[in-house]
Length: 429
Image 1 (tube, rainbow, N blue to C red):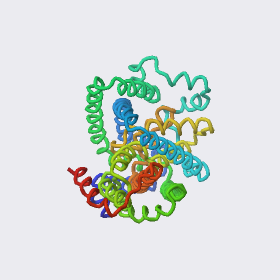
Image 2: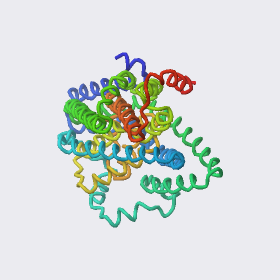
Image 3: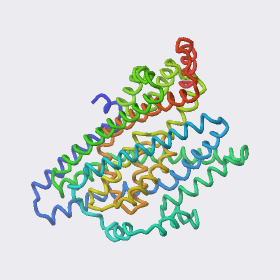
């Protein structure tokens, strides 16, 4: 509760969650007639629909600006040579493992299978064609004819492809590209501010969504949410064991020193649901166990944007859960495509409030899945955010130690305390 009180938005979302569920339950008891319940749900869902429209309004410019900046900055990785290459190798591998583990678990558990939510009218006609999309159509559809057309129709994957080419080309022209990067940095900052404004309306959307859902479906959804949270944290636990196990294979007994050293920053990240809050302390602790300044100061900041193991697992859980909740079958090929899209789209918006939900909303839009499910998850997102944030911090700590080992770079920790304190002071200033 103290954590929620420190985060006013999370507190009001929790209040809205409870109030919405109670409102829907009471209305269902007082008005058991199906027609009245449908009318109530339709009217109150206007608030939810407005919120979703605002979210969709943000997606295209947000993905475009943040991904261009992220890719352009990655172009600098070539200048740091083998450390950058090894870092990218680890980040891509860890991302794929996290996504695959989440995909396997959500298909085994099927947390949304018994929810049976009605498919919104706007998606009713598009679900069948989307599932019948063949490989040729999908591949050709990835590449945009016009970036303007892609933005106008929220064709997210086409925007991603354009951003990849544009970001790489911007990095390739060197000094001349800095003006462009600065422009898109400003655009990204504006979009992040707008995202904050829209997310501030989340309590109203959560209240309306839960009231409508509980009125129509009863209290079964509460049980489904509890099951989803437990299964997600089971997946997080397995991911921790896997990451630490691989770390043990590579850095051997140093993994135990690493776990002891980063226990406090990981706990801080979990309790505040903020990886930024743990960043200075994490840098200090990694240097105290022998990771050199040049590796920590490079790998950790890049990892904060490109190595989000917990967020990857959550995005897989959330996307497939929403499809299951609306009874939309997804074949293996389509699930793998969703997985790859999530991996690409997540590589530029680490600084976005509720970033994982923004990415999930974008992927749902692209695959013609109901974005209404995002509002349901928003009500309990704080509980997910704590687990995925702690996992992101742990994953980046292990990545830094592993790359240090690959570089034969471990130093005597006794000579590094003063160096670590100086670096932390620079970061905080």
